Image (tube, rainbow, N blue to C red; front, top):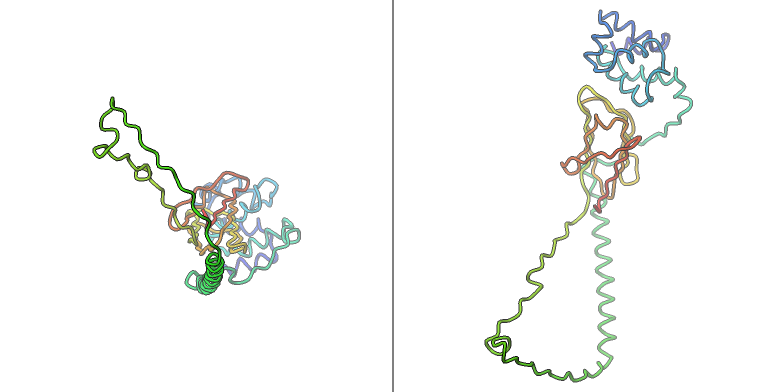
Length: 266
């Protein structure tokens, strides 16, 4: 069936292919709506080529993926045909991304670890040199005399016995009562994106200033990256997307489209 749909995409319109595939299955628009969870009026607009009645192209591509899956068609040629019919293929210049922008998680720490060891070694060497120079300079200088401090004789109030003297209690140390919060170490983290079943969403993920993914993810799909410095996510359909940071779900802020920024320093 995918090969058949690709051949038809050359000579027939997108709407004709979708309508004929649905009629061959003997399915009505209402039945398709119940299965794909896409409103029947939107499916009808796709079949009639009424693209002005549809939402943004990012949502339409998600509809095409779900509808093609329902009709047992290959979604790739249908999306290409939609872009040609709407002029998106000529008006949008798509940057060619490398096959692997972000290395696999198992190999992502090899080069940064070596570079980190080199940097730590250089910092330690510079620190030792600075400490040696400072110590040498201080040893040659004679410290100034310390002025004498007059001892104050505590005043004993006879009306309040026990305030001073051998039997007086020692004042509490305020440092013992203070709870000093421990600082958590920040560093690299694992970023994971999941798409809800029977849904789809356009998403662009930038990891360490490099575009790791840009496109429409279908329902049930997931992607994971290792982030060293920071990541930015732009999400077309936030209700269908769940974002995790080291296994903890992250709330997606509001926006059009919503933009989520995560930093290793946070």
